[in-house]
Length: 376
Ligand SMILES: [Zn+2]
Ligand SMILES: [Zn+2]
Image (cartoon, rainbow, N blue to C red; front, top):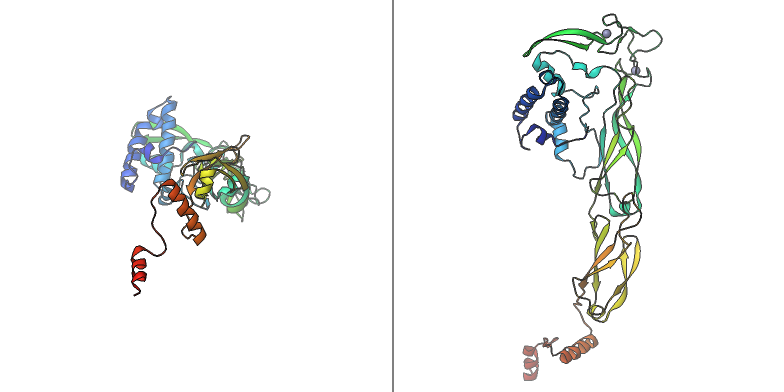
C-alpha cells in the first residue's frame, strides 16, 4: 500500500494532540467500517487507509519519524508502510484498538493464511560525486526474519506441533459478537492457535514459539547514477519476513543528496560559477573549469558579461535510468583584483584614460601629496 499523508487521511493538523487524533480516527473508522459498508470496496480501502494512518500517528516514535520524512536521516528506520497484516502491525493503537472498541476481541481476520511481510524503510545520504558515478552501500536493516531453528513453525523437533483441536486445523471458528450494529456472526481466527491451524507443544528455544526473530542484517544496495533527493530504490524481498510462508516485504531506500560546496543541481544539470578576469571576459578566452568529474575546457566569447551563463552539454550529471547526461551551466562572475602591481596600475590607468573613465588617483592620495610638498 502506498503511503499517503496520514494527517490528510485523518483530516487533522500536523500539531494535533493524541486525543484529537484518536477522536478523528474513531469517527472515520466508524463511518468506513466494513461491517457498516458491506460490498463497498472503496469504503474498505478507505478503512485500511485510515488504520494505516492511525498506526503511524498513534505511535509517537512512528509519528516523529514521519514528521522528519524527507530530511537527511542516515542509517535505517523501521518505517511501516501500512501493511496491516503482519504480526509487527497492531501494537499500540491500530486494528487491535478498533476491535476492542467494537467489542470484537481478537485481531480480526488478518492473521490467517500466508501473508507478505512488511515493507521497511531505510535512508542513505549521498554527495554529488556518488550521484555522478553511482555507488553501493551496505545498510544495517533491523527486521523480522523467519526463525532458522524452527523454519517458522514455532515448535522445535519432530512432533513439536500438532493440529489444533478447536478448529481442526482450519484456523477458523465461528464467533458471535455483539456490536453496535446488533449481533454479528462472523468467522474469525481460532483463539487456540491464532489462526495457524496448529498448536505448539514444544516451543522453539530460539524464537519462543513465535516462528520469527528480530535481526539486524547488512543489506547491500546498488545506487544507480543520477538519483535525486527523494528517489526511492526498491530492494525486493529485503523487508520483514512473511508470515506462514508468505513472501518477505521489500526494503525501500530513500535517497538524500547533500549540498555541494561548488555546485547546485537542477535535475541532471549542474550549476557552477566561473570566475573570469576582466580582460578574459572582454577579449574572450579558453579557460579550464574544474567540473565535478574533471577539468573541462570552456570557451568564453569576447564581451562576456558577469551573470552570463555558458552551457556545456553532456558535462552535467547522468540521467537516472536513461542514456546521456545533463548540462554543466557556469555562471560568469568577474574576478576583480584587490592588489595591483605598479605596472598593472599604470596599464589600467592608461586604459581608463583611453575610455574616459575617471578613476581614483591611487597610492598616496591628494592629502599626502600636498603634505609631502609642504615638507612636513
Ligand atoms: Zn523458532
Ligand atoms: Zn485452531
